[in-house]
Image (cartoon, rainbow, N blue to C red; front, side, top):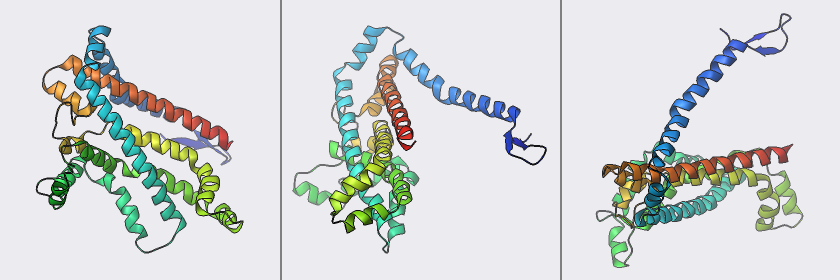
Length: 282
């Protein structure tokens, strides 16, 4: 059964209706079983005991502290990676130099390294056995088992999202307009703000949304560097794990629903950005 057929005279390709139906049904079935159904289970379990039980779980002091810490790490990681992503994308698409391929490889590194390994890297660097620990101890600084460690681990795992979204867009735009602006006397910042940024703004917004979504749900790396100090270094994913391990299943599902709702909002924002950007292109 082919995916499509050609006309009798060898004309335009026509989709095979049977293949199209089978592929659509398989895709929808897989998406429902692996994505939609688990999320529906989480939401139904979260509200299974009623609104009051749900509110007690999500308004608990430890849950509120975990939510605030998640927001702090997410915002900080997104801000850091936005700045780095813009700089890296500019450096890779506007200049030619030795080591360019190495920078590209380094950007992709978090995709290849397990988040657990990423957490161990920070432990071995900034922990008691790390080479940086004497300096940190002498200056009263704490990275591991503290908020800075959570932020650094989250930044590490989300590094590629902004840069990788901007690099192909900047490469496709070329440098003609920027060179024209420079010839007309515009400086670097003016050229970037008035020429470059307007062309990549939707890709930047899209990448920031993806980076935020990844940062909110990060578990592996922050789990290693957090020390699981309840009320101090536990983000929402870590707090959910503690509730589940303590057999507080209803509370765990209630807190999980917060992340599910946040994910839905992120998806909605992404859809809006995609729609607006397509309209602007047209």
